[in-house]
Length: 135
Image 1 (tube, one colour):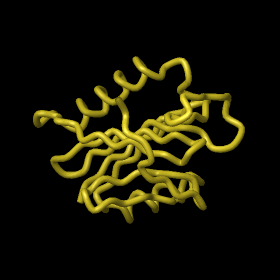
Image 2 (cartoon, one colour; image 1 turned 90 degrees about the vertical axis):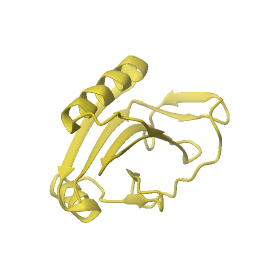
Image 3 (tube, helix red, strand yellow; image 1 turned 45 degrees about the vertical axis):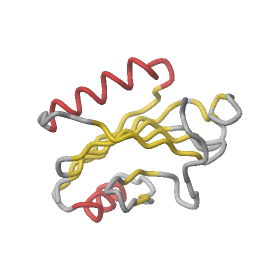
């Protein structure tokens, strides 16, 4: 199954729970977008607490190219000052294909899969879970 994963690495690590952000010293926060089949999600990771917020996005049948543009514009609008790197991965081979592409560029191929169909990246050896709910 075709899947696109866009990862924006941020230059901060933060905690939604503590309302705190600092310059990255360990793992960075990320904003990630996943398009899988007819579904799209935005995933925000908070490195201090290993917290994750997942939002299913209504994309109204837009093309994958349009979805990538929307993801970039939205992320740069809200996090542009702290985006340090951007990675776009596309594969026809599902999650296994993403792992192969990540390994090929030297990125930990640690992907978290959900029963709801979304997937997101986190550094190897970490365990992220939803610990807070955005207001």
